[in-house]
Image (cartoon, rainbow, N blue to C red; front, side):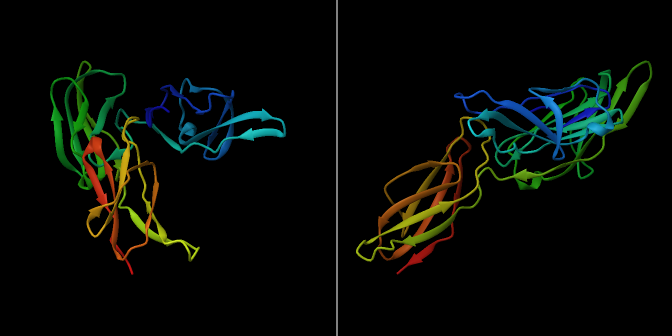
Length: 261
């Protein structure tokens, strides 16, 4: 969509996409669930405090039976900073990826020093005039409140810090949950294995592979799924489990085993 934090008086531009090439949709905007009188791209040329909030969009078009609506998008939070220094962190922050942060100073003066803190502990610094930070190999310990301290020269030396920016680290793929579903037809001797999980794509090309196991032996079949996979197998006694793997990040999560007798 757009940036999550801007200085008071800066501009923002939010875009909305509806993935339906067969139809033409109008994009309608909401702030804190209140409909805005804006369509298409949402541009605010000079932000004010009242522009802060959670923005969502949806598609609307006229159909044979009236107006058709898409579901609303996930909310995009916009905060308006009244100070001279702000810290932005690219969201979402996912396990196994990088944490990308930028310390911005109003007016973009010549920076002399920039420090990045997590929970008031220094984690990185720069004295090369740049203000971008990349922390690799994110894990759950990266969760916390970040702020930056910036020094700059505009005729005199200045030093100021940003407000705290809470960062939540999310799992790319959650621990799967396996359920066993016997066939309701007593003449059938099969059952369905259901593997459910959550998956947040770290990039458009990422995919999750799902595997099923009986007594530690992989069953035939591989599923590429976003949140659920299923496999019909012969109902045999044993201990079943499923695994969700993201090959691009070398992540693998296992369900708890389920016994079938």
